[in-house]
Amino acid sequence: MSFAAPVDSVHVRAPGKINVYLGVGGRHDDGYHALATVFQAVSLYEDVIARHADDFSITVSGVDDPDAVPLDDRNLAMRAAKLLATAAEYDGGVALEIRKSVPVAGGMGGGSADAAAALVACDALWGTGFSTARLHELGARLGADVPFALHGGTAVGTGRGDQLNPALARGRFDWVLVQSDEGLSTPVVYARLDALRDDEGALADDPPLSLEVPAPVLQALRSGDPDLLAESIYNDLQEAALYERPELETTILRGIHAGALQGIVSGSGPTVALLCASPEGAQEVQSLLREHGLESLHVHGPVQGARIIS
Image (cartoon, rainbow, N blue to C red; front, top):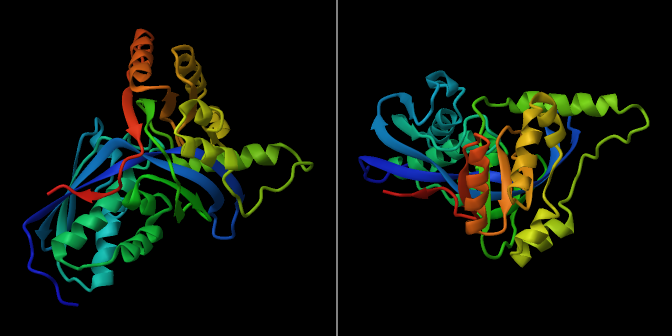
């Protein structure tokens, strides 16, 4: 493959996400669960800057604990860059600078946003010229949330969450996010869900291996009405996340008491997402939560996916 004339650096921004709906089915032979989910990209972003280098390296800022984000092949952005290099037969490297705003291990897809941003940044830096579909295919190898971080907006994810179809969402939805000082491991939460289901006994039906998003969720998004959406948001992982972190239920109830329409654990947690009626309503919820010592962020969605800033 021939490569375009190089630029010195590329800056890409990719959004975090909220799972407005997350249904978890049975576990396939490969260990992954069947999923039916609705992703919404929100205005909390990861920034990735890619620069030419002979080898692959990562630096990270925006985290309180420097050890919270790995700087080797455990990092999805590193794996994304190397995957693209292999696919493009590119023999150089890249220095990735990651500026984090999405909570680490917070159930909002921050690592997946990093991977999506790295794919877009390295493609532009190296001039590989891969199509959006090709980047989507590479992203799907890294995890179910990566293709969505590439596209953004609102989308239905099925299969293992990586089979995406755009969903029409009118207007703007305002969310208040209550973060946690300590992350939650996604594998731990899924394992807890499996254990809770096993404990339900032999009379319980096996979870299906194919799921669909309920029609009321999609109708609420199309309407642009947050009151309707509040009646439909749901997360199958929430019970498991609350088992691991019972205090999250108190946060949800405080948010609702403060005026949020509904609250949900985002993905595998522990970030709590509180749906609000309006930007002004979100600000009021934030103010009342602060009286309980809970700091929060006001974000909105949907927003676009990974894009080049400069």
